[in-house]
Image 1 (spheres, rainbow, N blue to C red):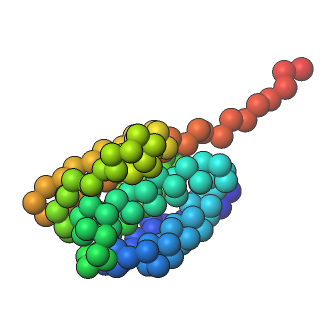
Image 2 (tube, rainbow, N blue to C red):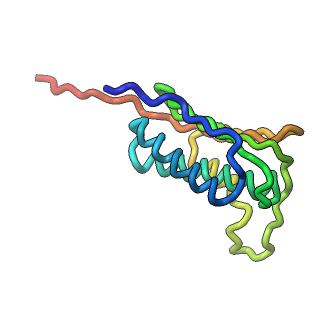
Image 3 (spheres, helix red, strand yellow):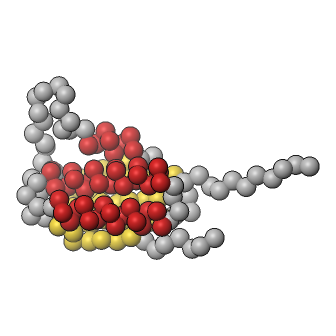
Length: 143
């Protein structure tokens, strides 16, 4: 079996749509390189991208004036993605219509990851997401 890839690190990425889309594609390539199946890779990238989009929406008011840092690591038993910003959390403006898709990002993060931790403070917000990886099961026929 090949060695898993080293950590994926991107720091100082502009919190603007084009840069975040490029980061999403680079993250997907890295996740697939770890050997994670395509469905699990989609979950990992979807939740990570939602966290990245929340940075642009909440930390920097969607103005793209700030930056985001992303660190992803493949451990033997899990994939962990840590996303941080250097802004200040701003409560989103929630559309009063009951069918609004706004305001569901945190629910998506928690539903897509096995673990999601969000810590916000004066120096920014850090989102830590983790997905458990099932160990390879070797089955032997008993004769």
